[in-house]
Image (tube, rainbow, N blue to C red; front, top):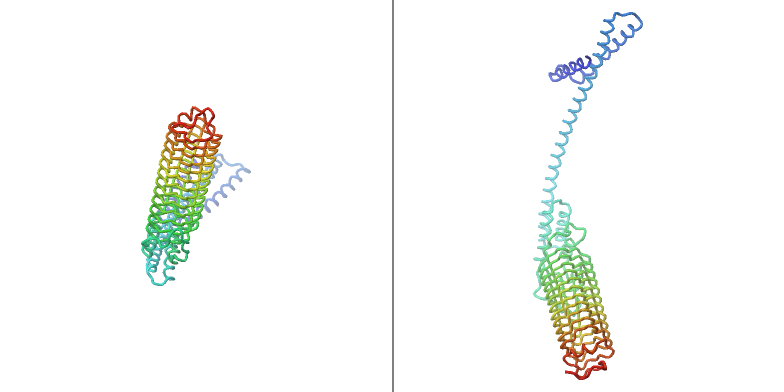
Length: 475
């Protein structure tokens, strides 16, 4: 029965509170005080009954009254807690709404502030005084760093790139030949240098993924050591004598750019587009050129020693006189490339496509040409001493006057090759196809070759060092 009385009291108090009969908190404490006093009175009467003889109905009434008092107190407490929880929830919701409104107001204020700073910085770029222009550049860089919107950063990037392209337009032509000393860094204006620093700093807002359009820009002699220009558009840009050592140019577009004499030591040019680029006398030592496109590029006199050039596209490129010593060119496309006089000593050319390439007078000492395709290549007077040509395709290759002493030519295909005056001393020709080969005046002293192989040759006239069982001359 007590819980029923408690429920009735809770409902009554709730209705009284909603009707405004008395203030909730004051009424609550008054009610609890009355109930406390009543409970104490009932408890005292029950104790008196315990020491005296009371009628059963009186004792039962006291017990019912005690249950009623306890039930009413519990109901009041639960009602208070529910009321308090509801009030706290309303307060929290109101505070959250106020915070959200304030955050929106601050964001709008901050955006308005950044917009104003952007406009002022752009105006400063057009000032005649260098100091003010530099301040405008610094202001734009700060806006790009502070804004959270990538769209704003893209706008800042486009403005700075446009300034570089317009303020220092591309020169009519290089003002120095590749053999001259590259221009000094001071040849680049201070404001252009400042912008390049902003656009290429690895800690700047313009990280990988931004399209920095510097196409056609005149950046001769620029100091971009360690710069991050990944994905940048540098088509037809003039970077004569620039220093890009350790720079990140991954997936950058440098097609038809002028990079004569540029320093690209240990630079990352993987997957970059260098098609048609002028890289004569450039320093590309230890550079990463894996999967780069260098088709029809001019690399004459370039230094590519120890460069990573696996899977590179060098089709039709000019590498005459280039230093490719110890370079890893495995799987590269060098068809119709010009490698005349190039240094390929100890280079890895396994599986390389060199059909119709020009390798005349190239230096290939200890080079690895296993499984390489050299069909129709020009290899006149090439130095292939101690080279590895296992299973290589040398069909119809011109090897006139070449030095292949101690070379490994096992299972290679030399059918139809011109091997007049070739030096094959100590070479291993086991299983090599010599059908229709011209070996006139060749030196075969100590070569591992059988009589049957030489009988398939087109000519052995004037050849020396032939096996005793093979007649000479033969035609």
